[in-house]
Length: 109
Image 1: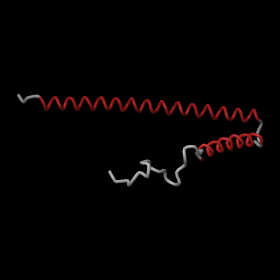
Image 2: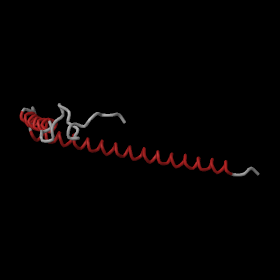
Image 3: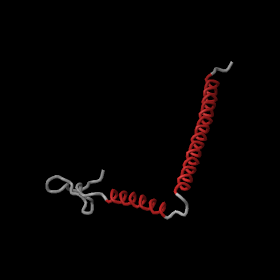
Image 4: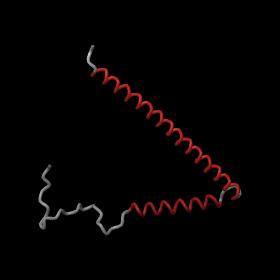
């Protein structure tokens, strides 16, 4: 471990000069808040200036959500099938390895 030098006059390690203090707010929270507000305002303006009626837009959003849900379900189903296949292959490989070990341990007759 490298020597870090003295810890200061009172035995405490001093904070770096550019490090944020504990009581200062973090800029990440302000960024997240600003992003959220911007997204909400942008969505509202987009709906106000949309070239279609509100009912058509809601129907279109509903269709998109259904498609997304179905494709997500398909993806999970594909993953489930792939994991099942991998598990079967692992069991087969384990059985082959166990048989190979048994054959090596058998005395020659």
